[in-house]
Length: 415
Ligand SMILES: Cc1ncc(COP(=O)(O)O)c(C=O)c1O
Image (tube, rainbow, N blue to C red; front, side):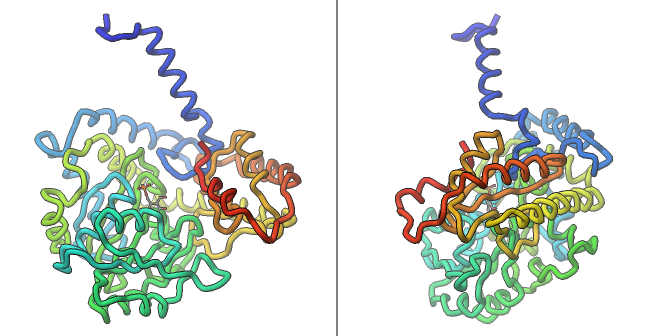
């Protein structure tokens, strides 16, 4: 029946095995951050219905691309960008759907490069910026100028230090709204003033924060979020990931420009769409569009509040465990668990052995455990805390001198 090397039974068996290896069915214990995560939870009245519609839309567009049959997908993309850009405070936003935060950041900095008219140059950003910022500088032959955090506060940056790092060949500053893995928001209004003074392109990496911060602010959950979007006049572009807090199936991110003229520059350097890729699948765009249409502002607000409710319970529980701390500064659904006195590496290993999925990183040294609660984790906060309480006994006293080779192995996503 199938002209293949394997029979259908063998094929199905292998597919089952690969699905199991991927651990999709264990999603409630997945405290990592990429979607589609929106599944039944007592907090959200629509249960699985929205996610199912997103999967249906994805399937209906699965053969689509963004060229000849791209009419529908391009309309969806314009619709998402217009809606989100409006929430970000732009009156005439423009942009496109990308494969995620890395591609969005790349396209933004290529646009900055195009606008600068320079061949090379440098890019200034706080050193807690995502690794995709370092990567894009390498790819595009730009010098990365990471600005160190002030002592003792890895989540922060001093705007004066940003200004001091600017060189005559600097083409852009990148700030972050929702840092990985602190959840902090950089002082973007202050950085914006600097960008204006030096006539620099300012890009905001809100890959993580972009689909949660507006809803927390507009619903009054956190009215004191410092300004970070197009309301800061210098901000030229913003990355915001649909496949993170946008709850959409991957790969899907948004790059929103303040206006059409910036999108034109993006298209000049990356013709014809401004994106890194040529052909893009229409499935992810349709899946994301379904989320945006069906959730809308009210839905995303409910999702954001549900995520933050879980975050608060989790963070409170962690703080009650002797020796554990939650890194300060998070304004979103990101909790970085660490210890000033203990080496938590055995704890991270034991939690993973119990089936929990999360990211770990070597900063703050020797390990930070990163958990990102989302609505699908409803019901899992207390079991996670119970396991954390039990496994913390495995922690060893923190040695003054840590072997750098042993730390290299720490950063991982648990596979
Ligand atoms: C702040 C930030 N920027 C960029 C990215 C990169 O996103 P992606 O993995 O979708 O390319 C991430 C991913 O976690 C992130 O947290």
